[in-house]
Length: 289
Image 1 (cartoon, rainbow, N blue to C red):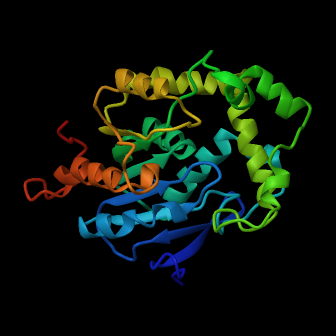
Image 2 (cartoon, rainbow, N blue to C red; image 1 turned 60 degrees about the vertical axis):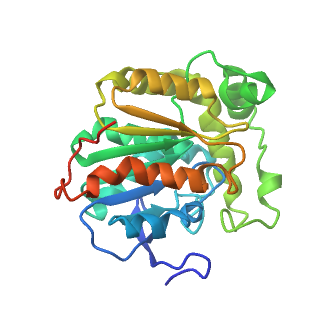
């Protein structure tokens, strides 16, 4: 049933034993746009995108990651690993039988979308990454960087098990994280960022970075102003390494918030226009940049 603030159908699918909630456009167009939110967020972020993408001839879907929104919220921070959320996306796509994908991802959602495109280029027509990155090594700007990204942050969060998010998430909050159970998710994602430079996770991020020059999926990079989990240096790195890429920086005067702004939506529609043009009646991975 449509949410009163999100006037499109929604339902659940079982992913890794958990119920994953998602909104969808209720249409049956041949090209599927799957939109992935970042940390401390939810599928609700993509509400402004739906009418524009549907009008352009796309089928839209946006899931709440496990631990967010209306999806199940397991009370175990250690469950939240990059592989767990990356696998969840693949299962979500497989369970719904989705083909001809355009993946839109913000922050962590962008990195998960990028990982899927690397592993399934045959099913990915285009990528749109907003304020995303690939955890470049030895980039730890300031205290925030130490807590979120360095080995020190990993020790601080993982070994000492300091829960920096529980007290915040037990306060009444928005539709993004409506229950106290979200505290485990908050801590889990903080750990994910802190451990991206440690052990297996470091090798995992390195493998993604090494795959970038071989990824021929057309990609749009959107960067907004202000502090982000991923720095501007990360965006520049992606722009240098990806062979088929276009980059857009949002002006600070945009009236809407960051990646949901009118400029972002317009940039996405312009980027995707060749896919639905009369000259290309069938889905094609080749978008003119």
